[in-house]
Picture: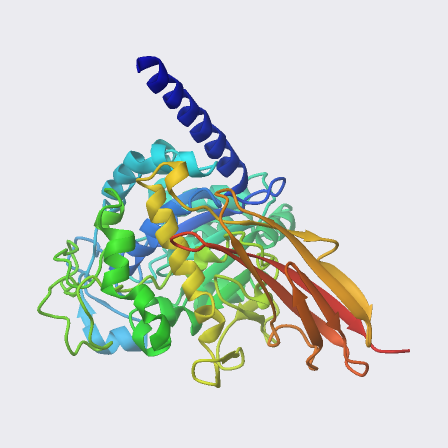
Length: 511
């Protein structure tokens, strides 16, 4: 009996190690491709906290090089001297007038979240390679410019940390996520300008910074980008999301189609993500959960008596509140859509197109519309909404990684393109697109090819016929332009995970 039990345990252990190693090799970014570098600046609003918790569950997908406390039009500490401050931004100027401080959540709210991350880290690390340790993440936390909205007059630990990263010898792109105001980043840039402008090194320093820094901003939450960064650093790239993030923010009920709202409602959020999934997710803010953020008297969302007739709609207990800043890092996750270098192609972080007036600015808005099949209208939010189901199911799957062994949890399928993903063809050609798929858990997979008509310039509707993992395309004989075809592969796990391969076809006209 003892020998049989020992043999069974050895077999189970070997299987677990085999599965774990397979998942470690497959669940992260594609092998051979460096993960993007990123620094997060945050004002600590409750939606930032929720974005931060989800970020930690994806911390293996990018290299987090800094976690910086900053201020915004909604949150600032004050200088401790009773100085009155009036916002430069019209909305908060009208709402608050002159204040000595505003809804300040402090500079310690990351600490319990990182401690909780440390508790689930051993389990997360079974499921994918590359999760940073708690100690590493604690080592890159800094306090930036927090006294007032837009304060950028003095160097801080946070601004000096960002400055050092911008000036280091690593020339890979550095994505600066702006979850609050841009003021701490602006201070880092101003310090660089003060030190080098007028010196022989200035041109090379300016070129280094503008070639590596990319801002991903969710709205303007202070005036420092408009007043300082844009005019003084015109070649610095910015991805600006002002419309699409709303489906992951406070008014999500106005944007997300009713058929998909269950993914953000209390039953799904509570049962599949928040409760019974370890100490990190238990700190995630949701409606009516009884939690209160210290320092912010306007955080009443956790009060179960305040769910009805809020300015954003009527909510149920444990409903999603907001993660308005999550698109900034969802853009960085490699799910196979090749959007990192091409924000105009669209992905989990939305779709942003290059400004005709400012060539280093990519933005959304009224001219960046996708067809919404739920409303049968062109929609400025749908470039983000179209990924909501995949994003939320993936979140639920990762929540399981906090508590389940490898054999019990779901992991994303692996999708490889057979042949080139970027091709040239001639109008009238017949093409065959094919992917090879596998699943680390042995799940059944469903492949669906679809054309993304709003991306690219190909206007005709080609004839297509799918058989399994192959798609045959008959191009229209009189149409040319860039055609985008996405192979979407979903597994059959309890929380289905989805990965993709994008084919981009440059169709030339007939001679």
